[in-house]
Length: 77
Image 1 (cartoon, one colour):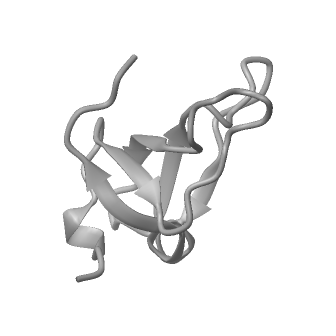
Image 2 (spheres, one colour):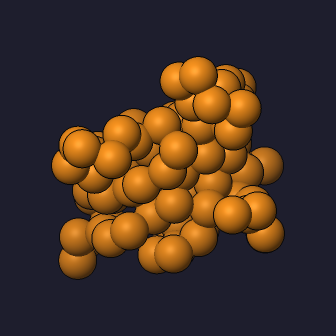
């Protein structure tokens, strides 16, 4: 079952369809949704792959859904 725009929630963590390590860290490149626009066409996210000195990326909802494989219920900090 694939995710839809209605499944995406602010504050929730999502794992890639093909998870990979984030840079040289041992964590996967999971993403936490920080915000969405009113019409759910853009998503801003944060995660281990986002470097601390960079802005949080904004991508189209279609791009995020293409990347996302599943919602993660609990993310270890």
